[in-house]
Length: 149
Image (tube, rainbow, N blue to C red; front, side, top):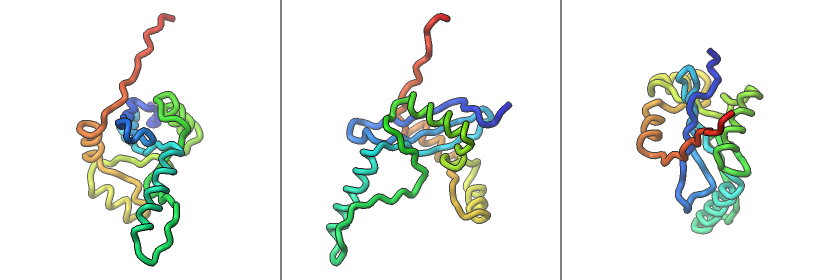
């Protein structure tokens, strides 16, 4: 069994006030879970505007449009399920999936140990992912193909 075959893909469904970003969680066939944030250009523009407005409030600081990307982001033109799933297929095919998606680990100790070893901190706990899936995400439902071959 190939570990890098997606079993489930959960896509966060924001309300109309935040139409430019989606949290995505991917569960692989081997049970490993990964997460990343999918965004559009509108998201980046909104982040730049927010930083500009915040910098206007600071005395002796020039107001500057900028965006700081601190977590893995995947920039796409559209946030529909097909685009997200196709980009995941491409990342897997290009063998760059693990460099973009954050591995969700068993526990906090494993996460901290990994950060100590390689300093990148690209892990989240399964407990956090479970809470996100169960309590936070309003998930866009998968549409089953009902066509007859």
